[in-house]
Image (tube, rainbow, N blue to C red; front, side, top):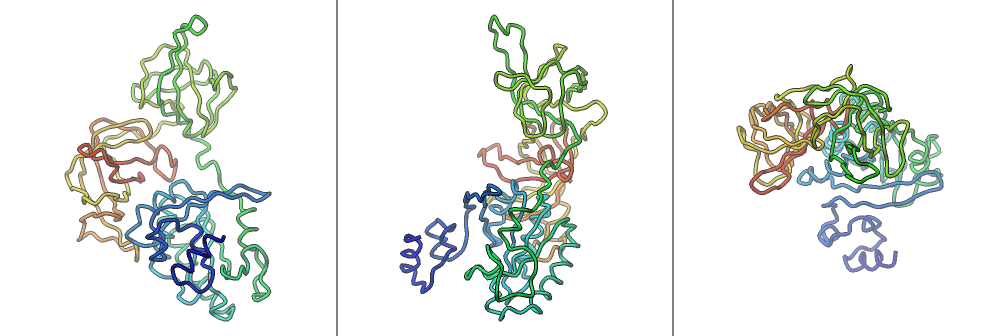
Length: 379
């Protein structure tokens, strides 16, 4: 706290500036903006939290996509004096693109609009239209004054007309749709475990993290891409055998039959196969200073699987501030979001991003520089 007070004085700020808590870079403090994603950890008796403080400026869209990709809930701050801005639309769109199903809109600086209920209601009405346009399932609205703490931890005496939960109470009690993919059995293989010891002489385990569904010993599985069938013999996790494994578990699965399986293959349920194709339509956020090359070749990585690809077509570039689709100017530069079609060098197996965030996302790598140039969400 002392450090923040001193930093504020050095920067010529008269009052305590709490944004310095998360703006750790010198450039951020000088300019009063967030540039990189800052992670802050805290806990209350009810829950543990990780905050990813992401930048709002359009030239840091890629940083925002990175921070939002692992979030369960988005908090979008709105200046009560200015209402819904282009930045609000941009942040809400990125949250919906990355399948964040809960958004809390905090209408801040209510103290500067004389705690006006009318002003708050007007902004909520505008946001309601945006929420229905983007199809966001759960949106909440709280009038706050972050500077004075109104409706942040305790109920505000200045806004007796607001009867909802305070911000802290809401994030402590909101029910998160944790398991986004309970049905589809997906197990991307990362590596093969062959101990070759006397005790486990014939053991062959396929190690990886369950990307969806529930796997149990005795169940039939199909191996992709070979389409060979087998049954699960055992599911092991560091010295113990499990009766089942669920989404998020890192386990080793052994099968009853000796099948040639390697890194990049996937175990799935026989009656619920993913899409298997070389033609993929997806939304990409471009990360690199070099623009996307139409017809260019890149390496794609989806889970533990890798393949070469060629950019067949840029269908449109999204105007991220107005949500209009630009089909004329389709040059995709850094921080742009675009709808593209690619053809891969071999058939890949995948789901849509909305169906399964893990098996529906991929990254693009420039083979020359080894840089990650884009993140993609499969449509």
